[in-house]
Amino acid sequence: MKDSLRWSYGLNQWNFRLDVFVRHTDHRRALQTLAASGFEAVELPSGTGRWDNIARPEVILRNHGSAEGFLAFLREAGVQQVSSVFWDPSAPAEEEENYAFRFARNPADADAIVEWSTPLIDFTAAVGAEQLVVRPAHSAWMGAPLAPEEYAVLGDLWNRIGRRAADAGIGLALHYDCLGAVHTAEDVERLLDATDPALVGFALDTAELTVGGIDPVAFYEAHADRVTHVHLKDTRFRDAGEEYRMPGAESTMLKGGAGRRIERWFFELGTEGGLVDVPAFVAALRAHDYTGWVVVESDHGGNPAELAMLNSFYLQHELGVAKR
Image 1 (tube, rainbow, N blue to C red):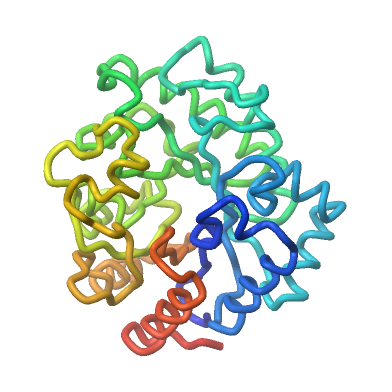
Image 2 (image 1 turned 90 degrees about the vertical axis):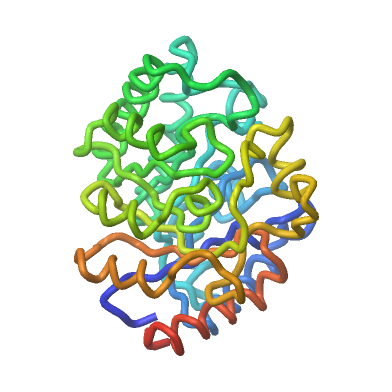
């Protein structure tokens, strides 16, 4: 995509089941689809082990030999660069103490999480990506609501990791998640206040904020100076109460429809009945001279190749973004 904004695409929507996005052939086809749709950069998803082998640095390096070898693989498929890498430290990973559970709210876990960040930071820098995008806290259903004093614990942890990222020449961005313990607008304000703006940015996800009851346009207008990364997708639904607190909300809410027969929560840009004012949001980015990446997603919203093409069509025909 040729534009004053920089466009990337999230690979997370391809990896919707352990056995469907594993072989190099699968990866190559996805990358070729994105290149044909005009996207020349990708965001790598979070994951673990050989079943998520385009989502974990240790496995990528094992399969491709080096960061340069991985970049050559991307470029052979028409994708020129990695914009960003996503990491969720609250999701147990084989590479992190063999699936250990660690929580950012727990001061006793901080040193381990900081050490876990090292291969992610090193790899993000090695492939020339600009942002390590992280989930700042666990899912809300996994514990009691965060106490006000716990935001200082979160802030200290992410400032430490932000310093490591800055020393490696990359940025750190905290991603809002509609299931996360940092949920309300007030929660996000507390988290931002607890972190150093020079070390820690905010990754604004338009659909996740909307599901969580926060207007992404208004939020961006109020916090443009902290937003260093964007995930752009749409939704037709909001959390009707505290559905994000349902036990096992990743399955019972996002996959199980929260008892409302919602087949999927996240949609392509321009979807009928979409709640995100995409044109207004993109206009706000332009008005504030936003310089970070805009990563288009559909996040397990349906057929990934079809949705990539629909998102490309919307950018071109509704937002006037040139394909090449």
